[in-house]
Image (cartoon, rainbow, N blue to C red; front, side, top):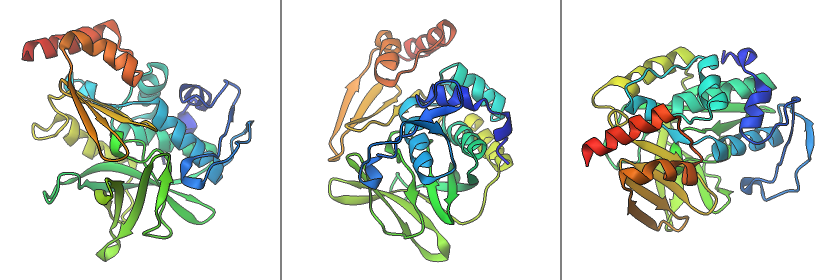
Length: 296
């Protein structure tokens, strides 16, 4: 379903820091969500929970969330080869449809059972938003896990269990849980400053790659989309999570404390490299500077 057979898995593993180019990688099962561990060293990847944790965490730590192609007015392609060229070989980032389509292809190639879901963002309070977020559900030994590499700096960096709604999971210094509402609706929540906050909600209905093509078209081109006309780059971190929105850099701390800093246009390119690991081509850097200078 996710065209995993078309993905250069070795190159993907190298991109996320797990591979050495021969189809094996250091798989570390010591994610914060499972109480730590020593890892197993280099071995063949298998569709087990240890591998799922390792790949998910490495992906979110290595590939930044960004929607700069939308800002530049370029089409966002979701076929596997286009994703590989951009996020793997081009060392760019992407937003949810790109991130989770690439993650789904890699997991499918390893041998996991992967299905899609469509989610409704709830970070804007009581405002009812359309279903525009793409997430994954991965089944391991009969148990479902929420996997999401595409919700930016607020999202989980490791899988979240779905079999027992309400179970709290610790991921480094960040805590998440999934609660259940009526009609089988599941809600991902994050603990901030002692209070639980809804991030997004999703139904049991399965989504397929073709559904993400439709959602991607709206998000990348509709004038009311939150991605159109806006610089947006984000990255998760263990100690702090960062987001660049327009010309403002936000740092989110585990205790809920938020720091904000204005970034001058001339400092943008260096900041993207230094803070987000995002190195733009000369063409993209020039276009980003042109856009920001025109708004000053």
